[in-house]
Image 1 (cartoon, one colour):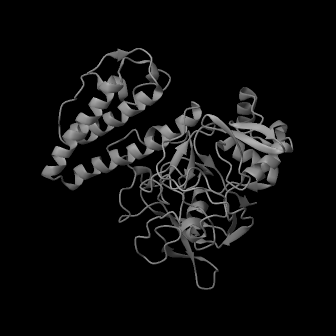
Image 2: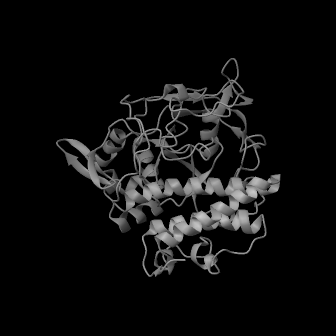
Length: 403
């Protein structure tokens, strides 16, 4: 390997970690190979290496890290050419989706670090479609929360679909916009204790938060925000982004609304009403827009995923992606906070990657739906993302329900 650095760019650690994850699960766990670098677990095992210290390790330099990644890929290709069984396929599918997660993470790290935006990937210009106010009614009934076999790769915390009972509810057609969140800021929402939970107010006081983290105040009467290394005017009808669960909850209290539970979110996204609209049926769509029973994979007309656009689009855009109840952009654009704690489903059993879900139960909130930088492999309706309620560095916003 190349020379070692005492302090490195966090991106270098992320790249090495992705390569290590592939190696650990596909070459070592599945194929029984020895580690390619003797001390690789001490460098890149995110379950063992504390977040605050991983940027200051004696990591290989850029050339060495890329050489390690290339070596892992070459050995994977050799094994795949010989054929693999279903059990080994699990480890490859896991590693690919883990890499997808880090592609997204590297993108919002660019924002956090004020780096340049992602390179041109042929992304389309964001459409200006305006606002989409109002709620839709979702009837009550029985709902099987979670994922089922036949949906492709499924993470352990989604297993398995189990019956719940939902009361009727009304949910917003679209996510809360920048303009709607700005009204809360301008009304003194960050300084009004009554709008905040105890934990939320403690976070706000500690951080001195007065507005979303990257907002820069008004310029010529319009709000602006830092986007990567430049400051741009906020699109009023795009969903608010980079807000944490505490901020979303405070906005709801101010607006006399609430966050949906993840059960409500999932039913509104892929549920189907009875012919008379009086109840939920046993039918569920694979994607919000897919009522054909086919694959229905996302396109840029359905969802803002896979860097289809160069950021979040207006909440009224992409009507072809509407759910059966008329909710728009349930998949893509921004991750959506729910009110639900990240907890195991009934009968939970950890998959071989035991540190993916189990250590985090009870300490995080559930987000659903994916964002503009999320892979369609990840942003299935049943996928449960999870972050601590103070995290405001991810591409997250929220939609609300009527009280």
